[in-house]
Amino acid sequence: MFTWLAEFMRDERGQGMTEYGLIIALVAVLLIGSLVALKGTIASIFDSVTAGLTAQQ
Image (cartoon, rainbow, N blue to C red):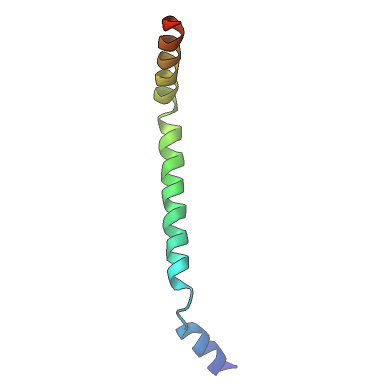
Protein backbone atom coordinates (compact mmCIF):
# COMPACT_ATOMS: atom_id res chain seq x y z
CA MET A 1 0.00 0.00 0.00
CA PHE A 2 2.75 2.46 0.91
CA THR A 3 4.78 1.65 -2.20
CA TRP A 4 1.74 2.36 -4.37
CA LEU A 5 1.22 5.67 -2.57
CA ALA A 6 4.89 6.63 -2.96
CA GLU A 7 4.79 5.82 -6.69
CA PHE A 8 1.58 7.79 -7.04
CA MET A 9 3.17 10.85 -5.42
CA ARG A 10 6.19 10.69 -7.77
CA ASP A 11 4.04 10.29 -10.89
CA GLU A 12 4.04 13.59 -12.82
CA ARG A 13 1.79 12.63 -15.72
CA GLY A 14 -0.97 15.17 -16.28
CA GLN A 15 0.86 17.88 -14.38
CA GLY A 16 1.16 20.10 -17.47
CA MET A 17 -2.56 20.04 -18.20
CA THR A 18 -3.31 20.96 -14.60
CA GLU A 19 -1.00 23.96 -14.83
CA TYR A 20 -2.60 25.08 -18.09
CA GLY A 21 -6.03 24.72 -16.51
CA LEU A 22 -4.99 26.88 -13.56
CA ILE A 23 -3.58 29.54 -15.89
CA ILE A 24 -6.80 29.59 -17.93
CA ALA A 25 -8.87 29.87 -14.75
CA LEU A 26 -6.71 32.77 -13.53
CA VAL A 27 -7.08 34.59 -16.86
CA ALA A 28 -10.85 34.07 -16.76
CA VAL A 29 -11.10 35.46 -13.22
CA LEU A 30 -9.01 38.50 -14.16
CA LEU A 31 -11.07 39.11 -17.30
CA ILE A 32 -14.35 38.90 -15.42
CA GLY A 33 -13.02 41.18 -12.70
CA SER A 34 -11.86 43.80 -15.18
CA LEU A 35 -15.18 43.71 -17.05
CA VAL A 36 -17.09 44.17 -13.80
CA ALA A 37 -14.82 47.05 -12.79
CA LEU A 38 -15.17 48.79 -16.17
CA LYS A 39 -18.84 48.07 -16.86
CA GLY A 40 -19.87 51.73 -16.62
CA THR A 41 -17.17 52.83 -19.04
CA ILE A 42 -17.97 50.04 -21.48
CA ALA A 43 -21.68 50.85 -21.35
CA SER A 44 -21.04 54.52 -22.08
CA ILE A 45 -18.83 53.62 -25.05
CA PHE A 46 -21.55 51.44 -26.54
CA ASP A 47 -24.16 54.13 -25.86
CA SER A 48 -22.10 56.76 -27.70
CA VAL A 49 -21.53 54.40 -30.64
CA THR A 50 -25.26 53.66 -30.79
CA ALA A 51 -26.09 57.35 -30.67
CA GLY A 52 -23.58 58.10 -33.42
CA LEU A 53 -24.96 55.38 -35.67
CA THR A 54 -28.53 56.46 -35.04
CA ALA A 55 -27.71 60.10 -35.83
CA GLN A 56 -26.18 59.16 -39.21
CA GLN A 57 -29.34 57.46 -40.47
